[in-house]
Length: 40
Image (cartoon, rainbow, N blue to C red; front, side, top):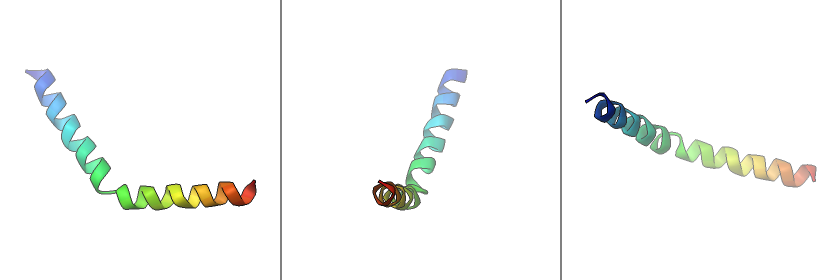
């Protein structure tokens, strides 16, 4: 039904959203952590 289609599409989008920008997200988090530590 509609639920299954929405679930599958959501899963595919979530998978691509997590796998593709993972390195960039980690780098951004690292930079943010360094900036926060430097500011403090």
